[in-house]
Image 1: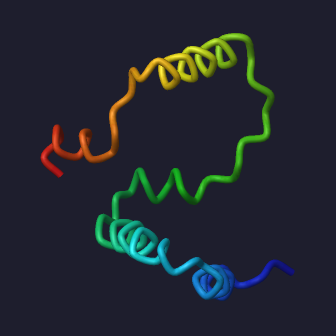
Image 2 (image 1 turned 60 degrees about the horizontal axis):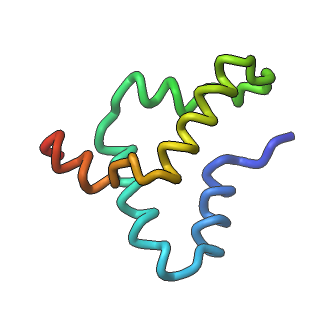
Length: 84
């Protein structure tokens, strides 16, 4: 039988390095405050174990190239742009 998810969460938090605690708190606060049905659905979905097709592999490679070339935006920039 699978472990209780709340107990697993407690164990993970207890083992978390202290510098990561504030970030984890922000994430959990955001998850519980939003109650976004789409986000809830996405996070509750089972992991997809299908192989990437050629289009997916190409898109992933393009994303890596963009990242390596600095064609990215930080979370802070995106939040500022969206007024979050």
